[in-house]
Structure formats: C-alpha cells, structure tokens
Image (cartoon, rainbow, N blue to C red):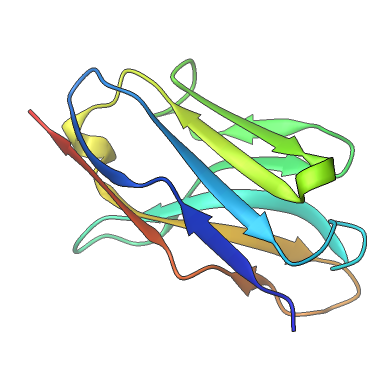
Length: 119
C-alpha cells in the first residue's frame, strides 16, 4: 500500500522558517506519480495547492508563496521537502503531501502536518 508521511510542522514566529518532509513508500516511478505536491488547508477555507514538482523536476508555486517557499526532492530517500522561509500568520494551515498519479489511478494524500505561525 502506497503511503505518504509528512513531518516537520510546528509553531513558529512570523519571519521564521520550517522545513516539511514527505516520505513516500516508494519512488515516484514505482508509485506511478507524475508529480508530488504540497497543499494546505486553513480553517474555513478550501484546500489549495502550495507547490508541486514533476518527475522532470519542473516546479510551480502559488503566487502567495513565490520567493518564500521552495519545493525539492531527494530521489534516493523518496522524500519531498518544502522549505518555508519568511513565514506569515496567513501561512497557518494543515499542510498535506500529495502524489498525483498516472493512468487514472487515484491520488494519494498524507494525513497532514500542522503549521502555525504566530504574529
């Protein structure tokens, strides 16, 4: 069974940094993922894409995090990271890791990790 496990969330002051990790139970190829992404959901709001990285290494970011967040991956560890700098209170949310899969297979989601930024 394919699993994604997030870690690295916590409480940080505005202006601080956190690094989230998402460990997959297999490589992007073995889990049939063509992209890995980080989403977030704040209370009362819809889940939104924060950043994504494709198998080819292309990345995209939400406008609200461009220049502050960086998505990367370590293929040897089957892990995707989200480095978050210059955090703002509005970044407070539960952050979820996602594997977007090929061939009509259902996406895989992690359970989420809470990020709280205090002002």
